[in-house]
Structure formats: C-alpha cells, structure tokens
Image (cartoon, rainbow, N blue to C red; front, side, top):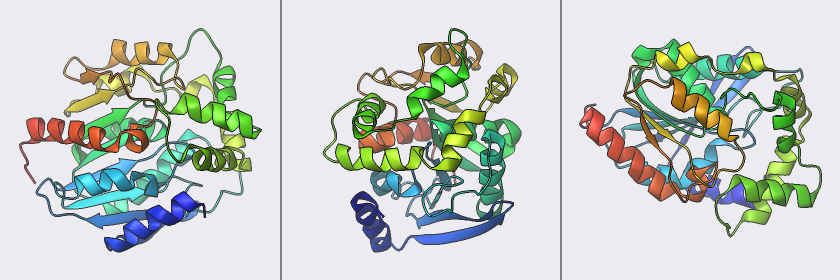
Length: 284
C-alpha cells in the first residue's frame, strides 16, 4: 500500500465507510459504501485504469451532504481486488462491475465515470437505462479512432521507466500535483501488472462504443472533456460529439486534465451537483 493509499484509507475509516465484497465470476470484488446526509438518493463513482476507489476521497467529502449513499467499486484487478490470473477484456471489466452494482445498487442512481469508468458508466446506462437517473462522464474511454490503430494509442499506457511514468502522469493531469511522484510510482506499478498489459494488448476496434449505444441515452447526461487532457485523442472527442443525443450537456473545462476527480475534485463536485440539482430537483 502506497503512502497515498494509507492517507485516503485513514479518511474513509474516519467517516465509517464500509467495505463490501461481492462474488463474481472473477471471485470476490470490493466496493466502498459511504453513508451521506443528502436527499439525492445514491450516486455511483467509477474510476479509470490504474486508479482505485479511494482516489475519490476528496469528491466524497463534497458529495456526502447531497446524497444518501455513495457506492465506489474497485474495478476488476484494481484497488483491493486481486489481479486476475487470466487475460481479460473490456466486457469482462463491464460484467464484473455490473455484478457488483446489481447486488449493491438495485435502485436507480446517479452514475459518474472517468476514463475506463466512463466507458463502463455509458455501457451500464445504455443497457440499464431505468437504473440511471442521471449520467455524468469525464473523458470516457471507447471513442472510435480513425487515424491511428488501437495498439498505437494504447502504447502511451505502457510506461517502463521512472521517466516514462513521470511523462505519463504529466500527460494525465492538467497541472502539477504535490504528490505527483508518488502517483507516478503507483501508476507505473499498476500499468505493468501482467493482467493490465494483457488487457491493453487484447483491445481491438471491436471494443469501441457504438453510435447506437450513445444515441439511446435518454436520461439527463453531462459530458466533460478537459482541454488539458493529453491522454485521449481529439478524434475520440469528435466521435462523442457526433453521436451523443442533442440533450446531452457538453462542457470542455479549460483547467481539466484527464482525471479531474483527482486534480480538481471540488470543482468537479460543484459541477456535478449543479447538474443534478437542475435536472433532478433533489428528488430522492
């Protein structure tokens, strides 16, 4: 466990967060549950590749007054979950996350997802629209590429040295962070896990989101894409802009990088709550 992880776990213990373990085809999977004081029901928070549930600590602090429950799963092979002992793909990630959410969140909920978590949030909302009251995504994965292959794109997720890791983290975040070196260490370790390397090697164009999955999103949707995000390709943003329904609110915050839930958690929480309040009127 890294120093960052120890600090965030101390925070979650201080607010009496519960760990849940849900049995799936890949064994027991971990999710955090935090009790809130708000009237907006449940919110689900989905992190991206190489991250973990505890990275939402600062957002949790801001969202607890507004929601009754916060459910934050660790994605397959991330956080407290054991690494899979076989190759996995996007749909393995998705099925596992769905199994966790099916057990812990039977009621309709607000769903937020970042990067790979954004891909998961969109896939979940397209398959189970009745269970998503509002959808908020930031730089979601799954946008189609034309000018480069999937493997060329995924090569940027393969840092080998400390310098590679620092470069990756510089691209990942839109500003310097006090704990950047520690984050670079954790990112390098996670991205070099055998199952993550196999996962990235197995990705193909068939794993892209389809236009019809986006076009069926009828719930209130907020789509965020930071102008300082250097991890995602501009063509992927174009794909989403061309295929998202007209009612989707699209914002491109100037200061956001790829993971504002880590670099701008308070601003992101405020944007999320403004959107929820305008669209759901605090209905439980």
